[in-house]
Every structure is written in structure tokens, then in C-alpha cells.
Image: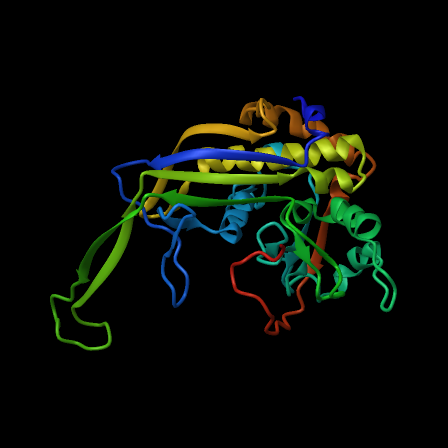
Length: 322
């Protein structure tokens, strides 16, 4: 894979043309008190936000985790992450799946997080160097946070990193499709408060075009000053997430099952993306190269959750990061 061709470019921009897998209708993401996010494009074309950057980040992470094994998918095994167990030693969650990654209330507030905090080396009333302090610590303990961003407010408000990999899905030339249905109670249809017959409305859409956009911030990645192997690992992992999402992750909702039509790189012009198969073959070797000095058993940091969960800022289900 020719990652060296990317070194003189600030961004790797990818566009994937999508279409509904069956029929013509699809259901976009919805927001509380807002519903679907319709808007007018620069030329007045009616548009729709099908999937937000927060949601796409969630999905790019989800396709990397094998729930049945409670581990990374096979090509990624050996990458570091933080595992959370309960008081009985049963796996509870982890930094790959948590909404705030290592800043999760299940992770950053616990005593077992001390080695990670120590590696970050934040000192109050001292300047904090993201490049020299945060980036190496995240590479060692939670590489996922390097890609999707983190805001470690549990340690210090200045410890933050914007997303190096981001994406969203938009639709052009949209038309709403109004429909509905009824929830039936054939025994007692007149019961109130949703227990009897309940008619409801729903809205779906058709569109002239649906495109998923992905942005890999090459300037940020190369600006971290990592080794050549580590930079290649981060790029390969980013592209693996994109390619795997486009292959197995496009069933966004029951009524939003999409299919990939075309995939192209818009910047830098002429760059050819490695295939999912090539990435799967390359990643295990890069993982072992970068983490050769870290025993496999030490790559997973275990945090025991105390059970003292307090409320936090931020919207549930969203990933923090720029």
C-alpha cells in the first residue's frame, strides 16, 4: 500500500455513492425535538442529513468490534484498548464502544485508570503538550481515541484531540414520503395512553443522490511526529474502518438499508484506495511492528468499575471530539 504518496497532502477525502438496497425510500437519522435534519444547499437544492458525524463515528467503531467474541475483529486483534469489568470480574464495556471513549465515566474516574493518567502526565497550572504527552499515551493505551478524538475533562479541560477520521452522509434532491400505520389492540381497542389502538404517522424520503463523505486529516496525523510504522498503522486502521463500514455497516436502521454504488478519492487526485482485503492482510503485521515491545497480555488495560456512576455532561450516544 502506497501510504508514502499521502505525506505531502493535508487531507485524504473519500466519497461513496449510496442507494437504497431495496425500493427507493430510506429513513434518515432523527434528532430530539427536531426530527429529520432537512436544509437548503448553496444552490437551493433541498437536502437532508442522513447520518451525522457523531453517528458515523459510532458506526466506524462498531464495525471493528466482534460482539460474539467481545474482542476486536480478527485483523485488529492485538490493538490496545481499555476494558471495564464489574465487581464480579464480568466484562461491562470498553473504550471502543463507550460514547466518550477513555473519558467514559466507567473508565476515567476509576483508580485503575491511574497508569493511563500517569502516562498522559497532566499537571495543573503547567502547559500541556498534546503532541508529546497525549498522543503517545493514546497510541499505547487506546489507539481508537487517536482516530475519533477525545476530550479528557475528567483529568483536565485542556486535554482534547479533534477527530483525525470523520464522516457524514447527505442526500440531494429529497422528497418526503408520508405514511403511517396503527398499533392494534383487538381485545380492548379503546384503552387510553397507548394501550388500545394507536394510529401514528411516519416520514421517509426519496433522493436523487445519497453520498457518504469521509475525511482523514493527514496533516494532523503526520504532525504528531510518530514513527513511520505508527503513522502507517493509523492510516491503515482509518481506511479499514471506512472500507468495512461500506461493506457490512450500511444497514443504518430498519428502514434505512443502503448499498454502495461507487467509491472515489477526491483528494489527493489519482490516489487509489487499498481494498478491504489488502488492509486485512497488512494490519496484523503493522500492529505487531508498532507494539512489538508491549506483550499481548499488556495491551488491554483493565479497569474495575466501582459502581459509583454520577451524571455527566454531553449527549448520550454521541462521541466527544471536534
